Image (cartoon, rainbow, N blue to C red; front, side, top):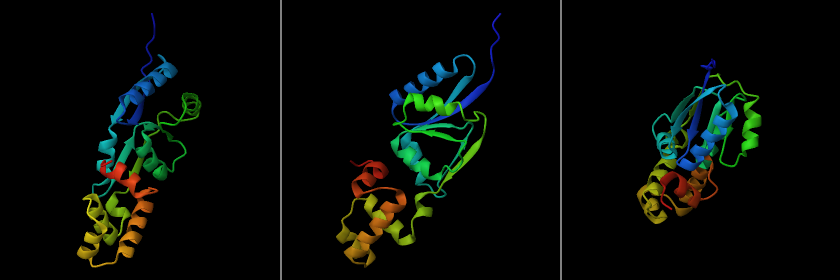
Length: 180
């Protein structure tokens, strides 16, 4: 008679890519085999990003120390995970790196990660410019509505990009607003 192990580990996956999720499931199921049952929590990247726009940001309770994330959520999470016991993997991590890291982690630790929302990261004026940028209005329109110069708009935009972790406006529009 075979003894079934009831030990279970929870894994958070934040991705819109179903092939990425399937690959993670295959990798972990092969690694743990019948020793440990794996429970997957899958969050869509769109849900993750929209939660960041809510007042108060996003609080994630990890039932385990293992988290996989698509590129944009990975970039956000890496800034706020300060606990060395949490294994965060992005799309660029190789399977052998993942397996090696899993050997060192406490699979049953519970952690909470709090990521501040847009409103907590930006000043009031930056928030106003972000609001206008999200609607795709021109710098001239922003200048007239806020009674500021183009140089001030440009300066605020630079601060917004830096605080949100983007190198340029195109990256921000692609990830924050899903326009491009």
